[in-house]
Image (cartoon, rainbow, N blue to C red; front, side):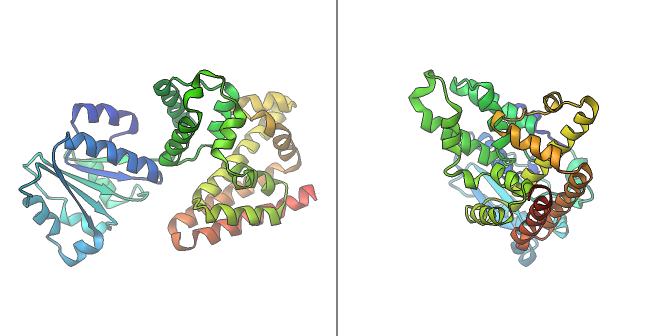
Length: 340
C-alpha cells in the first residue's frame, strides 16, 4: 500500500500503520522527520530497543532479520528495526516474514526508487507493507510549512517575507525546519513587533555570496569567475549539488514561463503575475534582463541540460560536485555572450 504525506499524520494518530514501512525519495530531511514521528508514535513512551541492519550485514548473515524478529530484550517492551542500504536481492530476506508480535516495527530507508524497483513494487502491492514516498518540497508544500509555522508560533509574515521564504527555502524538509527554527530563535520575544524582511535575510544568510539566488543571478549574467567562487563556497558549506542544480533549473523554468506570457501579452509586468511564488521586488530588474536577453530556445536547451545533470548527480554521487560545477559553469559561459 502507499501512504501519501497528507495521510501520514492521521495514520500516526490512529496508530494504524503496517509493521513494515518503506521510506524512499530524494527528500532526506522529510524521510528523517517522518521516521522520527513514526518511531515516537510507536514507542508510546515505552522502553524500546532500536537496532540498525545494513545490506552488508545481511550479505554476511541471511537470517539476521529473522533472528532479530524472534529475539527480544528482557529490558525492552518494543523493538524498532532500521534497515538501510538494501539492494533488490535483499527483499527475499523479509518479503515472507510473519510478525505476530505487534511490538515490533521494521523501517526500511532508501534513496529515490524507480517505479520498476522490486522493493518499491512489493511494498506498494501488499497490505502488510507500506511505502511512504518523500519527494522534494515544492511551492505548495513550502506554503503549507510556512502556514503551519506561523500558526503554531503566532507569527505573521508579510507578503514580501513569504515570497522571499518561498524562493529561498530548500527542497529538503529538514533544512527548511532548521531555518524556520533559526528564525524563531532569533526573533524571540520580538514577535509582537513587525518583522522586517532584512532581519529574515540576515538570519538565513551569513553572506549574500553564499545564496543560491546570487549564484543563479551570476550564472545568467555570465559572471563565470564569480560563479566558480560561489560554488566553491557553497560546496564547502555542505550544500548538496542537486539542490544547486534544482535552484537554477527552477529559475530557468520561471524565465521560460515568463517569456511565453510576454509573447501573449507583450507586457513583462503582466507576464510575471502568473508566477508562484511572485518575483521578489528587489529581483525584478535582474529577472527582466534575463527574460529579455536570453533566447527562449537557449533557456529550453539548458533546462534539458540541467535535468540531465540532476540525473547524473543522483546516479554518480561520488562525483556530483564535479558534475554540478561543469554544467553550471557551461551555462554561465553562455551568459557571457548575452551580457558581455
